Image (cartoon, rainbow, N blue to C red; front, side, top):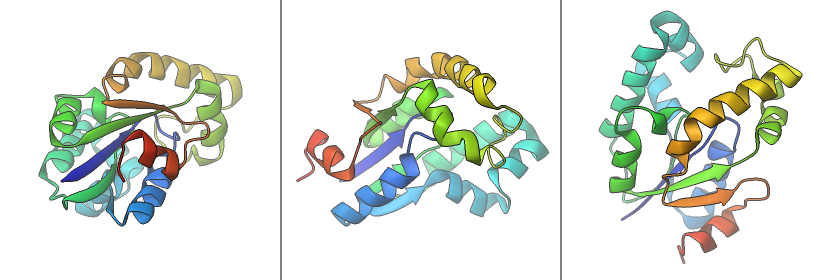
Length: 168
């Protein structure tokens, strides 16, 4: 059984890298945000604004733990998922966790054009966006760094992940 949970801040490349890695290895790809959206019948942004962050975090944890995973799967998680409840411990016990690490400035440049679909970033631009990301990352990184593998995200490729995790 090989389950790989990709964790890290929004915009670090979990979904993009996850799809490439799954294709490279012939694994299934699961984006937990999409699973939650399907089950809820609405986007993450709509869920957040309708029910609030606490309800969202509870739903997210439920999706993590109740999804049926194939034996060989790459799983992209929401940016905050590892930071709540026992989610990170659960992922570490049920697969391999990989933290895709990027600086606040690199994350901000990736996120600048996708703020509308990200409830926490909607009204932030430029230095304000970088500052917000730096503050959030400071809170979350203690969780992210408990991943079994930490990788610099700036030039991370599916091939490098295969090597890092010794998947072949």
